[in-house]
Image (cartoon, rainbow, N blue to C red; front, top):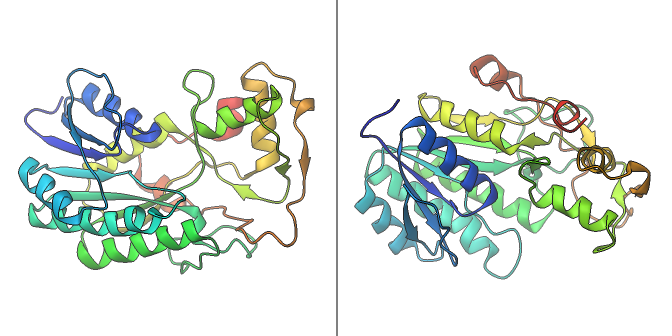
Length: 281
């Protein structure tokens, strides 16, 4: 068990952030976590409100906390503040972490790639985003790397929870099957989904390392959006035959093959990352 070491988790009220908060507490970290609008009711955690659009306030908060480790999970996926929060906020967090000499792990995404290649993307492949969110995440990577060269940038994929802890992607499948939403799940968009607990455990293991640069941490299975929806339906006791699949529209500009090569992470981590077929099958 750890004693006297402090970890700051930005976006602690989010899906991944909450899993990290719980796992870090269980490991004995002194946990400080941020939220933006709604403070979670969780004891044993110091909660701080943070607006990542305010760079000065972000740096000041990190300086006041002086954590040993910062794991930056907070982001905005859409809306007019997306670039300010997702990219600018990441840069401010990196500046704060440098000021207090904190270990920094920054969460990035597979959508920094254009998705037009065959096979898997490695850490050496250059980002080529085709969506606004992908561009914001790519900008965030550059800001973090330039500001905090010792930081670790972790690219991951779809984060899900399964029946015990459904996340946004799981819940959307259920909403469609149960008639609360309407969608066709693409058969030609490929991802490497990762269970939220596995990702949290991997990130906390990496927090204890000195690895820097870029690392791909995602599930070993490459599955289409359609297959993931079928797996999720089965796991939640729904009939996979009710999942509608089809190709993505040709005029829709989005990354289709975002499969990540995670062999480097597999050679480093002792945590076992399970595939979606194992978790949900």
